[in-house]
Length: 222
Length: 344
Image (tube, rainbow over all chains, first blue to last red; front, side):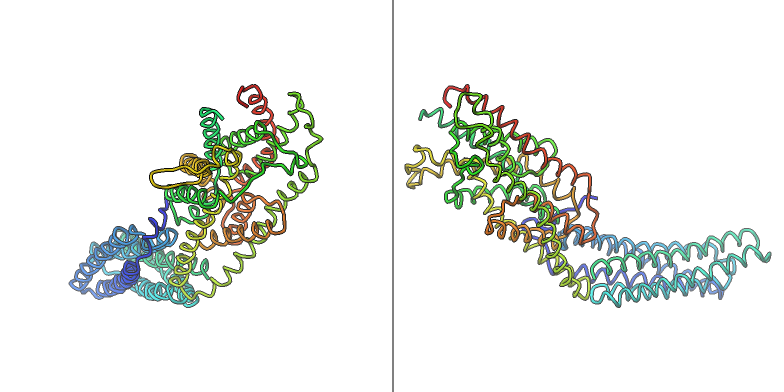
């Protein structure tokens, strides 16, 4: 990857741009948490048969995803390209933003799948996985916040993300066992719930990958 | 001296300065840390070289390798043979592989080649006997010492810097530290370039500055300028062009093909080089700035746990080893050629 140089003769490091960048970064971390929380509400609504609420939440998550994309574009096109940070820092922040945006994307894809399969009643485990995803993004939001202020606290939150992701994976394995051993599900639902569980778990997996990256940054600089 | 001869000597001075500029690695740490792009670095370096040559070059006297040949004075032909052969090897190393080599090593090799071949042309009092092996041994010891000392000091300095850096509580503080290091590095290297410009111009045009033609002041517009300004300007411009046209290759090699640098690691390496060179000069140790810099860059890369590109380091070390014999060979060949030129 080609990295630009910091300063076109000392024109870099604009404080206003940096403040904007920090604000946007935190907003994206809030967006991913909000998308994940709404994903859980969507799953709950789906499970309870409140399909209107499910579709309303789907719309809200799509809106959050679009706004996160806009924030990402603003960061990349209007701030990172203006030499606000040193090149290595720009590269690291860029990667972090991309990873956070991927979590919102995963939440959006999961809720769209829920909307498609809304006529089938889901197993409760899917709701439980979304709850774990929500918990993990909650923790990730704190990890991002503390990355800029306190490395050790940030790392602590990152470790907790890993634990929650493991819990989510355990629930998914339980669900897999249930889907493949019990015969109450028709093949179409079996496929739907199997795919659904993977899509939902992807939120937690991407959250964990982002937490790992934050931990790597914190370790590198502390 | 005839006008055409004078112009020819200035052209030779320009070419030698061009060659020296082409192997000027001073700005490498700033490029490696992405503080400057290569283009910005060579343009700033070029301008600073000219300023350094004009402001500091006049005070630097350079006796090309006289201590190597038991205090004997090289003739004008010999001096030019040394300078031209040095220029050839510097240019070859810079253009082909972008390898940073030591100007001092080139001079040592060329002086040996010229002194050893002089008896072939009926010059008495020359040959291998006049080569001061004590001095050569001292220089050899310096070459071994330079990278070792450079490595140790840079490693210690960067370790200390990292200890301070680790006190940072979050990414914002760390980024601020790196930003300050970036500005510090830029300023530090500009000052280093200024001093280097003043010193290196002496290598290129020292024989010219003593010519009677450049002792008299001359009038330019309403200004009365000392005559020495002409060779110094030729040298400074030559170095600037060498750096801008060819030097970017050497800078790229050192900045991107040895280790990955951050502003703080690059600043630590640069400050260490200056410290080592300052103390080395004070103690009379013949250290090579190029060797110290390369070792310092490797040291900060090692402390920072970034991968060191061994293949490139191997090429650089090989170029250091072969510099003296190759320069000696070029010295012999160029001297042979010059002896048969009428005006030498």
